[in-house]
Amino acid sequence: MGCAQSVFLPQNDPKPAKRAANLLKAQMKYQLEQKTFGLNAQEQEVVNIVNIPPMLRKIPKEEKWGCCDLCHFACQNCCCRIYQGCMGSGEMTIQEMIEYFDSSVVLSKPEGYKVWRDQAVGMDGQTRLQQAQADHWFAWQRLNGVTRNLITRVHNIPTQFQQVEHLIENNHPYLGNRTIAQCIQEKDLFAVDLTNFVTAGELPAVAPISPIALFVIFNNKLMPVAMQLVQGGQVYTPANLSIWIEARMWFNMMEAHYHESITHFGFTHLLMDGVSVCMHRFLSDRHPIYKLLHPHFHYMHFINELALSKLVEPGGFVDRDMFFNHVHVLSLIARERYDLEADIEASIKTRGVKKIPGYLFRDDALAIRKAIRSFVDEYTTYCYPDDQSVVKDWEIHAFRLHLIMPRNLAENSGGCGMNGIPEFDGRLNLVEFLTNIIYICSVEHSATNFPQYEQYAFPPNFPGILHIVPEDTLDAIIPTKEEMLSTVRIMKLLTLRLTKSLGDYEKKYLDAMDSHSRALVSPFRANLTNITRQINMRNEAIIENNRNNPNQMQEYPYRWLLPRNVTNSISI
Image 1 (cartoon, rainbow, N blue to C red):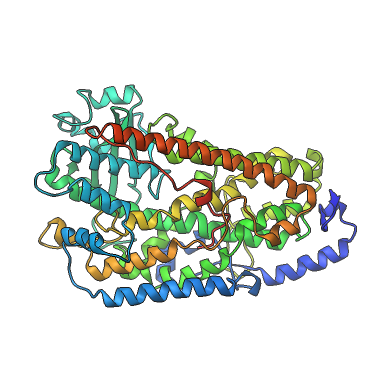
Image 2: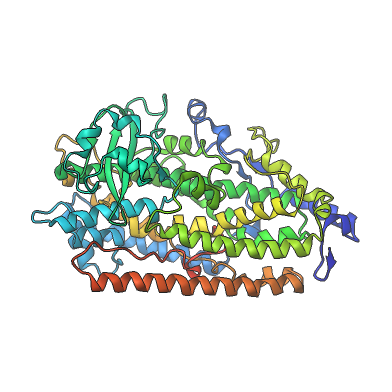
């Protein structure tokens, strides 16, 4: 490929010496480092620190936020801190939290609060329909909440429930007179398995936490069946409402830690940080793939550096306002593998969840991924006239080599240690890889990050912390007012939008492309506009059906993957 705007494959570049010199400068500026996150030697051993993805060693000035974005973030942070300070501290009951959001003229009303208020969760006089609606919301969170890629079809009843199978089935409200075995046979039973939540040596003072929950399709909606929170402990079902509500809260709290550590910070922020560093180090800024990927790393390195100091390192948000400390959160991150969920299509097929009703994230994610892939395929086909041109591209192979190279604590001596990246032996594998990277930076991160306020802000809905106290009541275990407001502040900051929507590239990135590549962006945007129309029509149909059937269980619309809500990059 040779064209305007200085875009060339390395084998076709008429100025190889200049290209090599510029690439050497980039390699001096962008260096990988295996961070230690303020851990001492013993903690690093517990975490297995070398298994955490490496990051950019030092932030170049080009990667820092612009003045307007810095001011926007600083003002928001300042306002949130002032608000938090003015609102005081102390203990609150769930009802007082509901009244707090009811009366607030500053805070928007999060979805979790609306469910607890409207369905009278934990209140005397809650109707059976309200109980079922609250249970459906709990199941809906597994499909369309902040962690949506865990639910898996069950082929055999998990060992945790085998001894109590008949007790679970007895008078169960959502099995519809079926046995669990029948539900499995009908392919209607699913599980969210977090039994590897804690491994030996990580938290010796805490019980063997091992959460797992079963779900079933009932009346065309996903509903909960049973759950166990502690290895060998009690099994909870909706039939025992008095302790079921608390069990849901504890399960959500544990999944919240999985979300923030693996789904959010590990799989998007940290993993993509190393990918960006390798791109800068091994793809010339004249390389067409560099120009394709670059917009999707916009502002990422700066927010990652900020997240380390304010959220993850000792004394940060994790230590203050979450149940487990930063050591355990980092140990969870150390288990992440790129190949587990990088391809959403493969993940859905592997987990057997293609036909779960109400899995709106799945439908929207697949539609957008298809649009991304189409764009990437056309772009790559233009850049590489045939498979041999990919084989001859030594820069793209150096890029891949350092993505899969094992990690190393020695400075700038290891790679990203990623798994499942195929050989770039032609356009097909390269297209799949590039599609996955853009998908993670845009769709996966947006679906993981931007609903956080709606889920976390009202603590009983999706708590980051619960308290173990002798008085084991809902009001006794919920976070304090100070903890709630601290979470509200963080989630308000984390859901700021500092970059443009997917396909709406900043001018500097469009200008860096040649004219033909720029022309490919318009069909991409048109595909996204069509997806927007389809999502809006579906959501309107859900709302209309809810309005026409007020005495039936309601479905919830899903808006987080409307293309306008999906940002190009991991910028916050």
